[in-house]
Length: 109
Image (cartoon, rainbow, N blue to C red; front, side, top):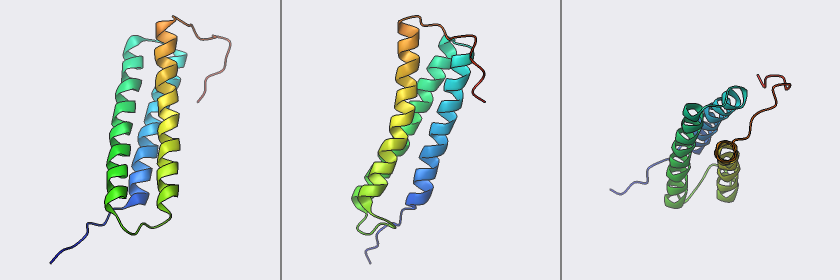
């Protein structure tokens, strides 16, 4: 008998969002105390988030019926991914151009 595997797109989007939240917390820590190690951790979390997105897109491509519109799932995943991508590119540019943060700003959290 042939069965399609069921994918939980809600859980997959939530996992991607939580990984992005983890990366953004590291980004906020980086802005408060810039260091190469925090910058590398932001990059590592971004890579993990990319892998979660890859898995979601693969599942989306293998699924005939989705719980809501597949284009919406794809777009939501893309926007979540964009957020962590922007954090990573900001860290990379701050390190490359040796940009220092403004110490007069209040903490984000």
